Picture 1 (cartoon, rainbow, N blue to C red):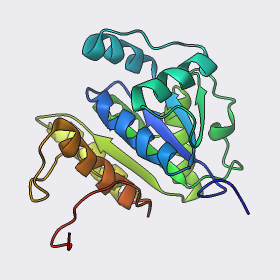
Picture 2: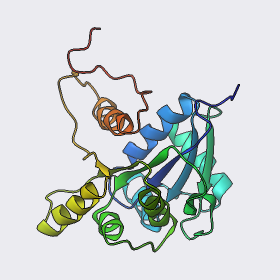
Picture 3: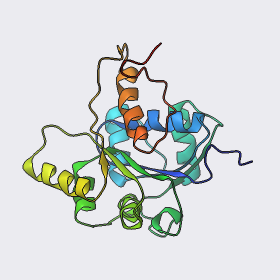
Picture 4: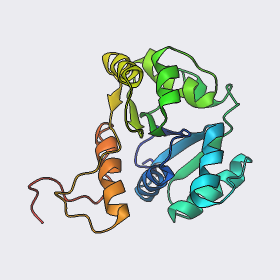
Length: 208
């Protein structure tokens, strides 16, 4: 019997959009549920960590994996491997490396534009592009406001290509009490698109 929740890993891409807490909470629940995760953060994500949290994310893959685990509060569960953004020869850059899919959370409008036009300038974009060409599940969580016409057209292009788009827009019917509650709603809805249910969320009209 396989020790992990699923034999295939899930790829998490973290772009330079604001809202790194979305990535942290996603990683937390996936690792706690014993999923295998392959993670790649864009170069801009390093800058966002500095801007939002005042911390420096390590570039070394092993140190970065420990960094993410500490931020997520998950020391040992699951499997986490981090990749440098410039390593376009990594396993997740190949269609022959089978995965559950890819989620880009949060997803910047720059990343949206590159995916919509087939541009792969780093490993994050290449890993997402691979999902499209292989017909696998790709979920993006854009975090931007307001949206320009260009943004909307790029998002439409991705939707037409089969990408599931889950904007970072929380709900209130589950009676959130903390910022984490609001974030977890978005994380749960994004993981729903991959048929992964590991976030403790009170759903609409669900019995307590």
